[in-house]
Image 1 (spheres, rainbow, N blue to C red):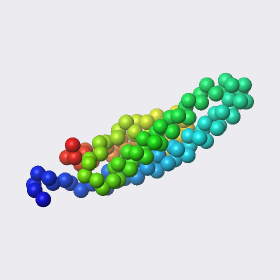
Image 2 (cartoon, rainbow, N blue to C red):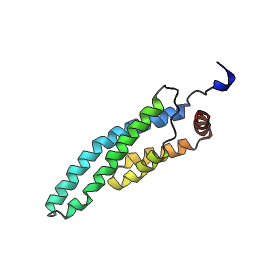
Image 3 (spheres, one colour):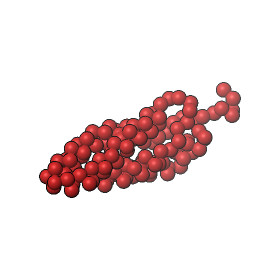
Length: 127
């Protein structure tokens, strides 16, 4: 292997972000239909007025799909370098609007880990 093709090993913190994103993605995909049915039930009970907030159930669905995709990319062993998914972390924080406090904690932890110097060096060396 030449000196120019050196790639640092994936830090444990990057793997931790990937695992957190996969777990949060699965939890959000479970939470989204539960939230949708709850909102729909409230909407029926309020003669349709409660259904105005039904699009709020799309936030955990989108966050779950994107979280799964970014987590799988971070955990994969291919040479193609994933980029930091700070947008997914922001969506996880915004997911507190749908009542998912676990996603809030994971989003904050992911942003803190993305700002770690070791993680930043890993992603900058992969670009």
